[in-house]
Length: 389
Image (cartoon, rainbow, N blue to C red; front, side):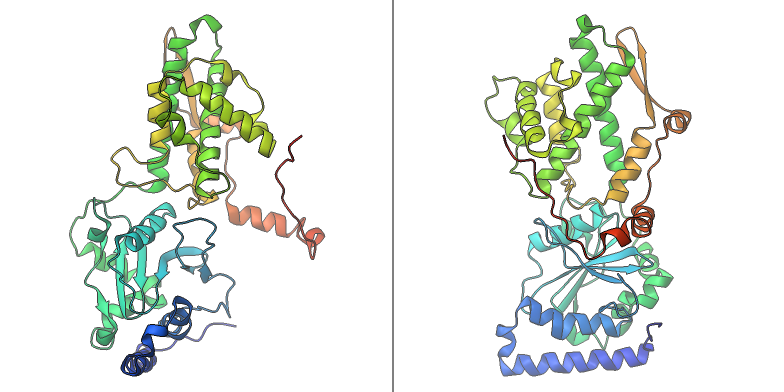
């Protein structure tokens, strides 16, 4: 079946009913009793249904998805067309203060981490639209247009209609944004993280060569050691942001400055290996190297905030597709070692030779569904950490 789209005039009639309902509960005083769930059910969901979105996924599997709140900083919904997120929506209870900077940061940063341009913040009473790509010290400055109050939904219906499914298919909101002039844009999350990882790798290459000349490291040893260190740090940052483990990385550079950072990191590596039994943390040459504290501090700090401090990295919000594509490019760089210096060069041939290609999530899902899917049907699986001896 295909979702029956309301005409613009029909949609306006449905929105009028919602505004009238809001006026009634406002007059009765019962608005104070409305929770966030009540607001979603009675106002926000029907509003976006009127705007043409399959909010209950009656005709598609994932046009409007509830975002999992497995850690702090999640938003409520993603609105998708053909599986591609078009905007993320953070819903609040009626009478909530939408100017709360935490709400705005949450919505804008989440959208940026997902590689999505638009973020919506609403309690139905008002709607705020943010462009997550616009670069500014204050996220409030990323707001697109004026706040749209519900009592102006009908008068300014053309503005509200920019959030319709029909208009997102036509990319009309993007077109309107261009009329705002040449706003400075943030670097996209994939390009920003790729750039940062490449810099980290270069810093480690040079520092390890400087401090470990007596070990006569081969180019392959150096390449593997550097990669192992960065992979481990990203794994730990992901554990921290998903709140699977308590924060640990920042403490190694903030506490006991007389103790070498890499020794403290090695203790963390052993702890993680004991818990997760991952090959990534198996004892490795990289743990026997000398690395300067200032280099490690710079890298660890860089895995929390971008160099210009415009964005705080949230690894729990970065999709596997994004990380996978970053790694496909990142691992395509090869090490070229000369006497006491190394430099990074991008080598597509190297990627081809090494088989470094990322398989998108939707391809993996299809393969799994059509192979082990039937075998796993109706079976329950429980993932457990490795038990301590």
